[in-house]
Image (cartoon, rainbow, N blue to C red):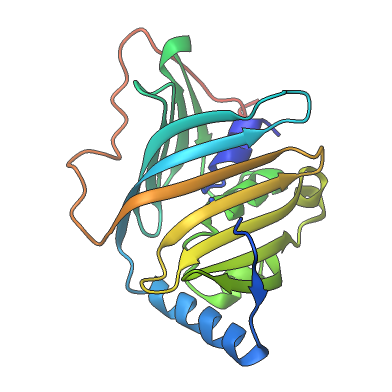
Length: 226
């Protein structure tokens, strides 16, 4: 599966000197996080994405912005000006590459193949609507806490997903349960980390932020269509 899809799962998404929570604390933190999801309607933040690739001597770092309207809208921009835009709507996901003058459309109509469903589960993991929803796709490996951040280490249940991603780590703030970071660990040893700053919960989002406004010179393709 293309690395851009892996990036969006999103989350869409590691602290030093972590101490493991006691069992009671773990259950309490998880219960609070899941309960808080029902009160999250919108979220926006600045983002720093750091990709570590084994064959590269230096990490690749990009800055961007993310807007989310729970449960099925988000916009993710990387670069200034944006070099990649991911736009999710209820019925489709669009990946826009302005420099390449190319847009890719992926339908979200329930008929997509298994690997694509796995990718969508990664995208939704930061804002699960229930514990059952999260655990349908992931096994909770550990829950740790330090410096007012709680980190969940998750392992995909799907055998296909585990072929390219070994672990997903989600960190959230203990005070308001908003996402602080996500990190994907891939089977080839590379990682992709997103750190979120200046996050805003439940504020009005810019009008039309989830609309796809494509210039006439953009070529639109549907990679899954045969």
